[in-house]
Amino acid sequence: MNASKRVRSGVMLGVGFLVALAATAAAQDVRVDWDKSADFTKYKTFSSEIATAWGSPFAEKRAIEEVEKALGAKGWKKADAASADARVVIHGATEEKKSLNTFYSGGGYGGYRYGAMGMGTSTTTVNEFTVGTMVVDIFDAKTKALIWRGIGVDELSDKADKNQKKIANATRDMFKKFPPAPGSK
Image 1 (tube, rainbow, N blue to C red):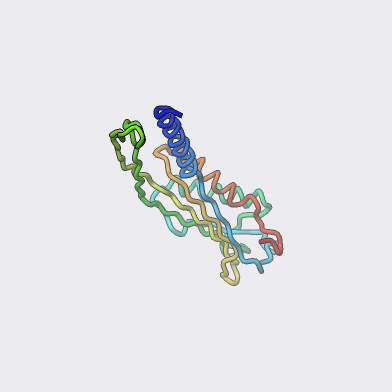
Image 2: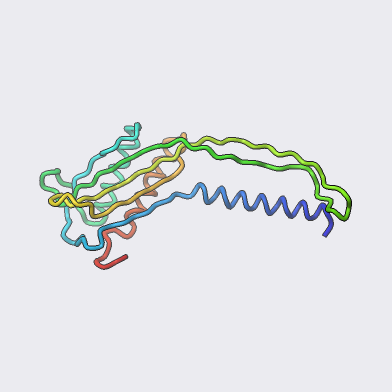
């Protein structure tokens, strides 16, 4: 393989790696955990509230609506806090993050047997982005014990409709296997 083909294949490999890395970085992270001894069959009603606001009243309202819709689809009914079996508490947070991306260009590889190494340039850019986290906690209303937790983390968009879809997707993924079956892990 000659030097220019090696450089081209190296660049293509690098581009492929960056695309794969970007796709992974953009993926939403959703996790759930629950009290393995909790009997979810005894919970039929819930109340819900935002406990930790994240500064976006519209997003907060959408988060409550999505969680209530997800629980309703599982057969749970919304009730007032005084009579509900479970209490659903939603927390939100945003955090500014930075990523560094370095791109290399030029500077073909001649190899030692050709007697020279090519000179190239590199450019590093700083990307700033906002990461949003939504935590949904479900407590037993009588004992106040935490019985279930869902956490969704994703990069936020500057477009409200995209963020609404991210809230909907995170909530859907959180409640996909809800309620946990007795003895499930």
